[in-house]
Length: 242
Image 1: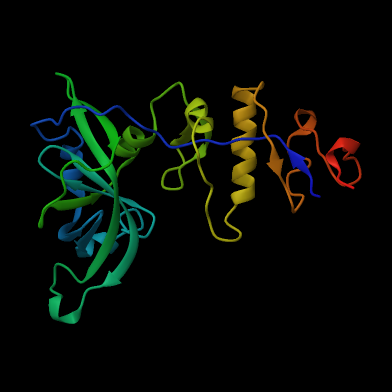
Image 2 (image 1 turned 90 degrees about the horizontal axis):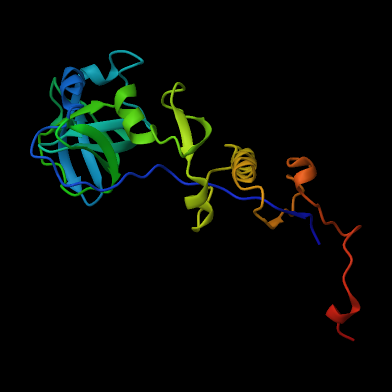
């Protein structure tokens, strides 16, 4: 038998879907100054971007794994996360493009209303085409993607920009299946603890059953939890067989 206890967790921001705008997104103008590459290939939800020398000029401009790029399309800025960097094959290299970045597409920044208010929606309604410009996301675009909803609960900050809060919608999170994934040592247990503490703050009446075979969470929730171990577990005789 192993210690048990109560806890829970949360998802990522999600915005309402709005009709496509026929004018470029208002985030397009500032991004135009920081073009670091062009689309070379599109395959499903993955895009290959050829990087210009500007992509490695400074630390702030480096297109490294984990950073977001925006692809400027006619009606939106298509957002992707860099999952791989590679040197371009020698036969394809030129002075303007010697390396590539591969992106997983995550959504789009679009506009709505007469004022052209920018908002983020998951998924891609119109894929990029070859040659469209790509640029690093600024704090302005990251705030559109992650921030702005006062109903959500902050649980930390973004790795890409520590001035922007990472938030969860507790009610939405606990009503769905979710997972916390990562390799050994990246902080999954700490992340789960923070999520569950925030969930219990928002919904103290919630009852959570946590199976803890490695005894990691026994002292994380104070008097909010009851820890069951082989020493204090009591079962009625009616649950036993002969």
